[in-house]
Image (tube, rainbow, N blue to C red):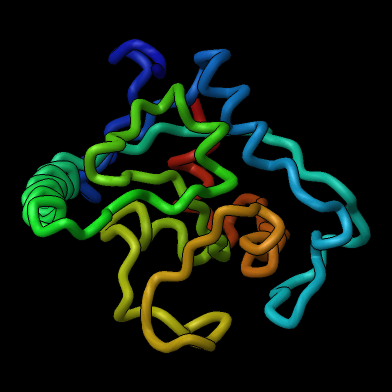
Length: 189
């Protein structure tokens, strides 16, 4: 649940639209995803940057991002997964979803349990946000930041404490920075 269409920020040159999340239920669910073991924050072999010492994360802004082309591809892929699960189930093979920490916090997002849909988290640097928004997560770009400990792929986590290791501060949040295009799209009214 997001703002009415009049508040949508269409970014046609990238083929997606952003809508600020204002629904209290969605906001609370997203905030709950930020709860983690405080001792994990900013630490670990993969930690990319330093924010200074901190022991919690707080949601400041959230957007619902839509891209018609990606949505159509996702729906087609979901149908393929649904068919494959049905075939495997008919052969007596269990396709039960593995329970994740994020599952308890995501009931408001109407995930499709018939295809074991889950909400998982991904940490990215500010310079990678526009490419992710315009092209989606891309396994061909894996390893360009933090490496590929388990091979090429898109790395996702169910605990924000792990994704925190792959982000870095947006210290260039100022006019004229190389991230100005991102800031203009996300933070201007």
